Each structure stands twice: as structure tokens, then as C-alpha cells.
View (tube, rainbow, N blue to C red):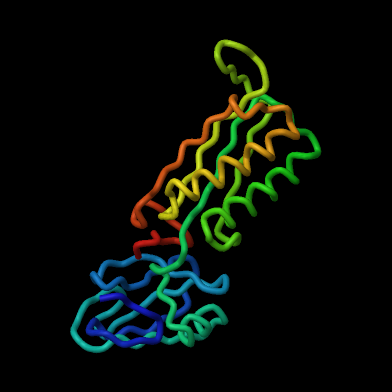
Length: 197
């Protein structure tokens, strides 16, 4: 059963509390994990102590801004859009235009995959030793990872967009590869937990 902050379900009675360094949250399986909100770390206690299990309704206390929004909206962390991450390796030195390229690539990924740009990560390593077809001429190797949204239409949109962006750096359309990887939610971590919980 999915757990939403502020919604009761059959599990141990819990109350979130602030922890100095460690954070623990409850998943529907009863396993411990992590939960962070608004820069604060939260853990849980039950009637039997931290991490103990017993039967009874769950009660989550939301006191930080992020927790209050989650409680009002009923948003389950496991329903968040997930990680689109773009990695670009190139032998071209991009110079001062590099940050512009990264921002444009970030927007491209968000638009193409229909995900919020706030979840998009872009890493560009330029000026590398990289050859293509045995020649040291402008080229790029790219990887785009995402939880879902990897399909023919979206991949084509990203490829066309990167092709246009690469033109400013003299990288021809036939001298770059993009590998698209569709990760399952349990294989991507964020904010002290995985997107699966």
C-alpha cells in the first residue's frame, strides 16, 4: 500500500522527530530508510522505540515547510518524477560557452522527457582525449539516464536538440553517440532514499 505523508495506514504508530545527523523513515514494507524535508532530517519513533514495529495506525507529524506541503498535497516521495541525468564527454574545449551549453541541455532534457527541470542533472567533461574512427577530430559520447520517459519519440527529440547544440562547437551530427538508459525507481537514489522508497 502506498504511503502518503499525513495519510494513515495500518503500520506502527509513528511520530517524526528531528535528528541531529541520522534520518529514518518508514516504508510500507516496514523497512527503515531516510526522509529529508526543508533541509531538516527526520526520524521516527514508535511505542517500542526507534525502528520498532507494532500494529496500529501511522501518524506522521509534519512541522517543516516541505513536510507541511507534502501533508496538504498528499504527495508520496515515490511518485516524484525521478532522475534525468545527462553526461557529455567531448574532446572539444568549450570555453566560456560551456555553461550556456549545459543550461540549454538541461532545458532540452526537461522539455523532451516532460520532467521538471529541477530534477535534471547535466555533467559535461570537455577537452578530453577522445577519438572517433581513429581520428582526433571534434566528437562526443553522451549518456542520458532517466526513470521512465525513455522512448523513441523522446530519444529522437533529445538527439535532435543535442545535434543543434553541438553545432556551436563544431561537432558534426555524425560524430556523437547518445546511450539512453531507463532505470527502475529502486536503482536511483535521491535525498537519502531511493525513488522506490
